[in-house]
Amino acid sequence: MIQVIDYKAGNLTSVLKALRYLGAETHVTQSPEDIRGASKIVLPGVGHFQATQLLGDFGLTEAVRESVAKGAWFLGICVGLQWLFEGSTEAPSTAGLEHFAGMCERFPALYNGAELKSPHVGWNSLEGVRADSKLLRGIDDGGFVYYTHSWRAPVSEATAATTNYGGAFTAVVERENVMGVQFHPEKSAAVGMRVLKNFVEL
Amino acid sequence: MLTKRIIACLDVRDGRVVKGVQFVDIVDAGDPAELAHRHAAAGADEIVLLDITATHEGRGTLLDTVKRAAAELFVPFTVGGGIRSAEDAAAVFDAGADKVSINSSAIARPELIGEIGRSFGAQAVIVAIDARQAVGSADPVGDAEVYVAGGRKPTGRKVVEWAREAEGRGAGEILLTSMDTDGMRSGFDCELTARVSEAVQIPVIASGGAGSAAHFVDVFGRGKADAALAASIFHFGVTDSRELKRELRRAGVSVRLPC
Image (cartoon, rainbow over all chains, first blue to last red):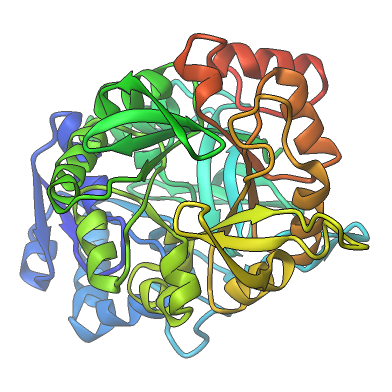
């Protein structure tokens, strides 16, 4: 059973549809109790980082912290990945889970002297795929995934793949049982479905 | 590298895919849900369904169509046509759309852009603009005018200014259709597309006039489009997205391949 957190942030329906298509049993929840008892958790999300404030308000941040400390598998999608970091300049007063170091920042308006369009919307490739990544099993460098975002997480030791747009950013983060993807696997055709299948099969 | 998107467009009336030439002649081209899946399987990066239904019964059919199309569609899916309120948009999102496209209703009440964006995120709002160059003007591209009501009614608003306003109000993307080139299969309006693309930070989807791979190369280069939309070019077996992308790659355009 995968506990999917509902915090009123967008793509819940499409994420559920994709997980169910893959045969996963899912349960939509806002309850810290469900999260404490979970073996697998998905945090979807699209939109503003401010929306994650609800996670703290509902007592879900603490519940996730306890659950992942006990070894529960966790997957954050888009804003769900950003939340795993310390926070985002998009909503500086809202803290993230602080599981990974670093702040999420906006794409620069200029890169190498040229104007950089923002948001970053469309299909871009995964690079530097870490061979030991459980989430990216069977996925090679150059695999295309669908993005739509204006803020991005920094590259760190926990980065399992990067994407280049105005420089490299963290496309996938993974350390042991805690993982996140900046792209939308539920909208990324075969590559995205493979990512979700890898998570479902953990 | 961020690739250029090929978006397959389905114009739907009363539950069937149709395709007009310059917004008028209509030819039946099949079931929308089936075609959406076929396009995704053939390598389209995104699917857009535009409802041109005039009847009340047709609107109910639309939500059912969206639901069927979205059921096993794992690429971005946009729905447009007849969305006049945040509630209309919510119903379409509930049925499985990822983005909505609004056109006449945004011109009539520009606040709608922000209202939908606040509930569903800016990335979920595409403002569609039907445009026609200003014949006889000293600057026919700069003075290009916005049309509404399926291209029947001029608004007196300039395309570039409206695109900027839509961005300021929180649109996530602009879908720019040239009525001068729509359905003619003679190429996109690259001048107008470039002018709009340079005026805004958000992605611009070019539409109207696709007839060959060379037209796409042109609109991604000279036209500075981030994505391009095509309908009739695919429906009648001219080519599919995968084949089109292979030709684009050969011409040096960055596309999602394999797909």
